[in-house]
Image (cartoon, rainbow, N blue to C red):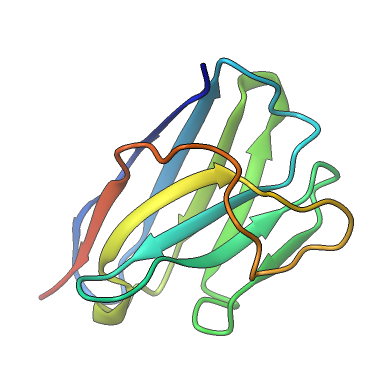
Length: 124
């Protein structure tokens, strides 16, 4: 059974930084594209950062040049380094394997059941 466990969220002031982590267990990690999604209150969940098995990355315009996604296949872990955080980044952040192969597509659906997510609040 696949399990995704996100961590690292918290309350941060505008302009601050956080690093989120997500560990996958119960299935293969290294050959899949991985993504970080977020869901703000009253909004649909959106994919904001994705990384291929070969470490190619793609970002939503809203986070480009502020967020960095990375992965450690030896630890079955994907990270999201978030810099220059804004109040509009406030959301619950989730990771998942992506239901896509080949080129990254930010419209990709998630492959697995969702974990509990980790809450990021950006506020003064």
